[in-house]
Length: 462
Image (cartoon, rainbow, N blue to C red; front, side, top):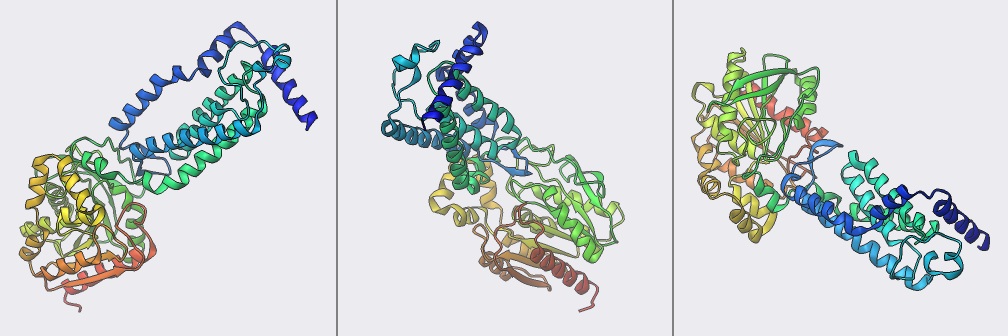
């Protein structure tokens, strides 16, 4: 142990004395003073709260991070590393090199500290906790985050207020803390929360869709209310599946699904941009009321592209499914062969109550714009199901673990469906349709079966 301590002191003396320069000293004094970081931290928090609600996670660019949960994680990292560091300081009782008269006489002590305890370095623990947690949440900033904690740790040794082993211990404590906090919060990080969800109706989400791949061809058309939109078509047979996604989603989340379905049944697949996402020129989502125009525009495009209405099926998830019900009810000569409704709601605020409870649904009403609340109160997919052409088949798919639109919602909607073709499929172990479960095998099979039933019944084959 004595030899290790000697190596510790020798490394401290090398960094403190051999690497010393006036410029480096000024830089290290700036870096090590936590007060200099407060304006940057405050600015980052403000940016996260107001502009960070849709920053992408690079593992899947359409899985978004809740900035409020991220900020909570940063606070937890600081609190936990501080508590662990303080506990160890009081029990190890190692004196700082600049406060130890024998050691300080061998060093150039450029910084005075109030506390005498040295092991571990709380500065290093704090910075490592923040860096590891941030790197796990936003991997593109991993390198700057690691450089930040390395500089903080180096500054503590350079200024002779900690031994190298104090800093290494601090990095270890901080890294483990950051990993622990991420593990605890990782699922909540991708959930928008009530405030973030309400913001979808107030603020543009800055979501850029990109391209689904070389197999897909870019197509442009106009929504029924006049917006010029850009979607993508995967060309297959004369049969066509039109996809309408839900709130906070993206059409790219079903690109893999479209490719799998084409391999199964040969059908073409059209990815439709919905307002409020995917670079749609209408910047705000409406919860399904105005998205009807997007679906009708896609049906008009499909007809102009040579697809027969008898060969078209609209596949809508969550809000997209509810909106598709109204769109197909008012489609007139554009009426498709059928609709596959996956996890759709019969009432927007009933679905909100399922997910957040009565108090959460009430808070959501307060946070959302009044005009949107009134519009959604009037929007009733059950009414439009009763108006649907009887020849338009309706298939329902729900997950038995769906906390937003449980299978009971599908049963209620089926009771109001006047179509001659109506079937409900419940997927075991599945939750609400999102980008993460968009192409699982059981969903692909269930969806393909629903499509086959609609097309066969439409042609009188069963």
